[in-house]
Image 1: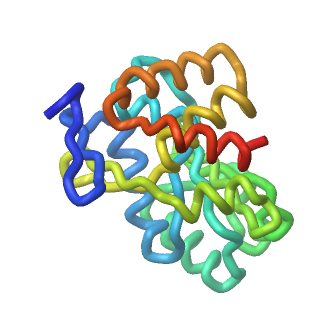
Image 2: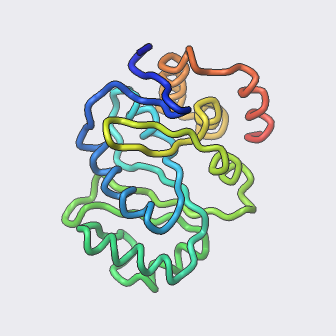
Length: 193
């Protein structure tokens, strides 16, 4: 074990207990995985690896979902005590999805934390690239996928660039210093720019 993680079968195993936020994300992903592939991006990547900061939303990117599959997914979420900020009717909410607009889900009777559900299609080269190069992370029995660490760092530094994102990137650079490969930064920088 090094710096709070180890690598097993190309999966990063984090040496920590599940937090309430981890359980919230796990519960959502357990439903989503039945219908569609995904990638958890942005703040939760840093938070799950030990950065202590609050977050209101967990960003999850997914390929554009066809309507019937979205209906099944949406109703499954409702049966499992999630609600959607954009409406209670899957047909109305699907109008956002098909236009590639983000939607949000939270537990019933709660606003935060929430899932920011971000659909994309092949025209979004950055999301398409990170999605097709997933890195698995595992905390206890919770396994999820994130972008390559170097990609996540550069995206936060170059595209997002807020103080919070720069601090997240610094945390990831420090936490994964033994894992990071400099040549990937060069490759990913060209894709992001």
